[in-house]
Image (cartoon, rainbow, N blue to C red):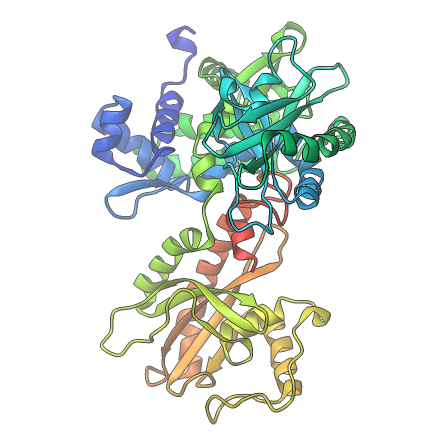
Amino acid sequence: MSEDLSVGPLERGLAVLRALSARDLDRGALVRSTGLARATVDRVVATLDRLGLVRTDGREVALAPPLMALSGAYLRGSGIPAALGPLVGRLADGLDESVSVAVPDGSGVRVILQAAAHRRRMSLAFRIGDLLPADRCAPGALFADNAPEWALDEELIEPGLIAVAVPVRNAAGTTVCAVSVASHTSRHTPQSLREAALPRLLEARDAMEAALAGRRAAEEADRVAGALVEASAGLKQELGPGFLQSLARGLAVLCALGADRGEGLTLTAVSEATGLARATVRRSLLTLAHLGYVECAGPGGRHFRLLPRVLELGCARLSALGPAEVAQPHLARLVASTGESASMAVLDGADIRYVARVPTVRIMSIDITVGTRFPAYATSMGRVLLAGLAPGERPPLPDGLPALTPNTVTSAAELARIVEGCAADGYALVAEELEEGLRSLAVPVRDADGRVVAAVNVAQHAGRGSPEEMLRTLLPELRAAGAGISADLAVLGVPGALGVPGHSSGAMSAVRP
């Protein structure tokens, strides 16, 4: 590709993202790993940080969950996870084994869908975005010329790991992806796994091929791309030459390709989706094609389609994040701004269970750690979580609940009224009901579908102001933290995009108890 057609900042920005996809790095390490000048790295990092795609708290630069918009564009555009997700989930449940879907990517195959066996303590699960050598895994054999109707992996990837895979084809007979069932030699021999799983795989394949034929593109690709363009315009005006607008525009072009319905998008369609000039879009598309993230397809090569190599941009690391890792930076900023301890919890039966916590440093502190459980009825996070359930889903609470302090509400009817109020208000304030002297304020954390999956709170000693002051000073920042965690969890757990609802190995499945 000639120099005048390339977008240098886009190339350099993607180089930085690839380096960060392996591990968090400081700026000096980024200079060494990318070969870029320190000033260039600083501008790239500043641009990605302001776009929310990386975080630069402290010395290290780390990928941020919103970066999954890039991988999500490919996953949505391919249509494979959305079409096959429910079928793969049912297959994993029926076989009680891990099931993966992979597509070809250069000399390897890349995992784009994963459903784990829920009843197994030892789970065999790949990360979404993992690249496997084609000659050392069952799916790889299915993309070769004269491929067989099924393939077996006998401990080629890892000692003890065995798998059987079948191809899934489109109407033209081309193998689009491969679905494989993985197990461990402690549970199966290669022969017994083939006998147990292959008939079910072949049976499920017909339904998968039918589902692929009826796939539809995601509706939010244009929204994501447009948001990047809009943000870049304002940030360029604010930051001047320190902001690489062409990098932001190139990433917007990449995201816009997520609206592909299978035949690719024309330059004009991408221009309309992003609001960018055709010349700008063309240069970005050619740069992305040169780097192996996009291919030209269709008659005359006038259509552009994302390639699975896009998943190398942090997908494997980000898709495997747990709830604590997602929440931690938000809780840390909340503690820094409020001076109060902050936590996140999920509902576990009639209790709450802490999954993340950032304490404040005080002489008098609250002794709570990850894994701590409290009765939901007497806590602010518990009431928020109960309020997020439909009335019929709420665990029954008897009258005469234990009074943990003289202030504890013990009437089931009164508690039901309070919970309804929490649902209407969007927060819960509990004053000295769990422990005398302790006051807590909580808001919900929601998933991509708007369901309450966790709660986040701040706690303080009752001697530091009134409940009204707590609401006035802490609720806005607490709500901002809850919204930030919700946004990150949503982008990591988009149903049908990054995994199977209820089966994903990423953040959302870890939040659900």
